[in-house]
Amino acid sequence: MSKLVIENISAGYGSVQVLHNVSLDVNPGETVVLLGTNGNGKSTLLKSVMGLLHPSNGAIRLEVDGQETDLIGKSTEEIVEIGIAMVPEGRRLFSLLTVEENLTLGAYREAARKKINDNLDFCFSTFPRLKERRKQQAGSLSGGEQQMVAIARSLMCDPDILLVDEPSVGLAPILVSQMIAKIKELKELKNLTVLMAEQNFNQAIKIADRGYVIVHGQIEFEGKTAAELENNEMIKQFYLGA
Ligand SMILES: Nc1ncnc2c1ncn2[C@@H]1O[C@H](COP(=O)(O)OP(=O)(O)O)[C@@H](O)[C@H]1O
Ligand SMILES: [Mg+2]
Image 1 (tube, rainbow, N blue to C red):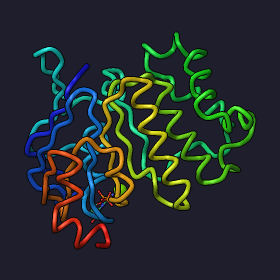
Image 2: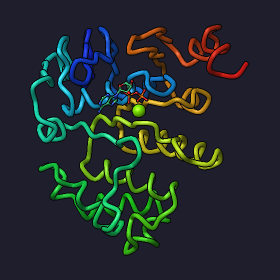
Image 3: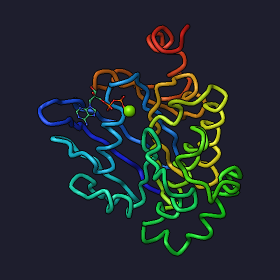
């Protein structure tokens, strides 16, 4: 299992710098949450890890048994091949394709192609609802079901590390709890390492081993345990509605 290390990265769009010297790491088997309200740089950070955006400074690497692999400079395809997958914000499904077609397209990682049937079975057993709707167009599903497809699609490439970008967005509160619980369940079943960006602090903290709060593109607070996140005065005051 590998450790994800992000060291002092700066990144942005054109001349606008969004991330300022951000460092964080995710140890093998951990669920680390990146907490922050809208527009503070969570997606920018996750996109940088996936090679969808190129940091101007700093390092992103994987460490496996003392061996380091640099991710900066690699293409997204190469990063997926190494074993990192992302559930993007806003699901990003192919809305005219069926559920099953969306899932199959997730399996483009070389190592996952051979396991396509097993992984499909796994996804359908985890999300029975998707099995019922496998022939239905993804765009015709409810928001919660679409989020299930997005998560299942990322699992189709058999990742070691899963980046999840705001799974709660646009879902009714009851579905948010279910989705967060599902991510924890999948993490345990599949031995995943998870980095999850969320603005729903209350829900994210439920499954976090530890986490970070990002404000204006900088890490404002690091909680070394879930309790440290929950009991921090700044978080209580501004984010937990205490
Ligand atoms: N494609 C883009 N082009 C220009 N600016 C962007 C783009 N995407 C995001 N931004 C800006 O970067 C900042 C951080 O955005 P983002 O990383 O999406 O935050 P979050 O995911 O925490 O809501 C915001 O000010 C946003 O307007
Ligand atoms: Mg975002």
